[in-house]
Image (cartoon, rainbow over all chains, first blue to last red):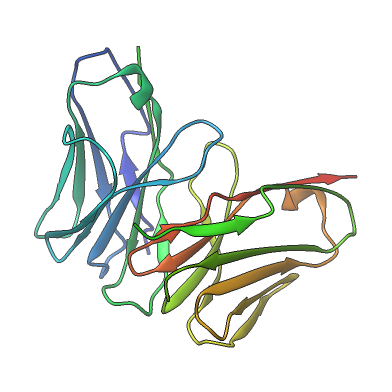
Length: 113
Length: 107
């Protein structure tokens, strides 16, 4: 069974451009979480989607947005890219509910130049 | 928002030593998870805990879900060089992470 898959693996953009990152959860998982991890630092919570709806949002500006599709895959969009947006973006999926496990994809390395 | 306090921030130990790290929270969680992350990769789930007081092992790893549901610890016995990495605790729901413990093992 396929795990969480993220695409692309690497992405290079210039300042001011927009980036779109994609995440396919494990089959049957309805919750998707997005995190930003700058080099050598911890996981900063971005967004949580469950059953197609945004359930929670981290302390990030509105230019970070996303959505979850009917098949539970998800997109993260970052507008007006800034140099400090360079980071590893990680997606995790889980079953709905509070008694469950969450699994991560391999991440998308976004570099803004 | 919810935050997890994870300690220690980093550890340098000799191969063969035991390791202990813990997480505390001001909020109650129904699930505690422990992950290990290697450089440039996504975190890998090590242990999941679902019941207050639960003690679970996975090989040389042992983790416990605190009775108050506000804390958890992870122990690694007889450390080996491949244990090197960053260990994260996390609580559900939502999926909130500690800042990580960076483990270095000296052969």
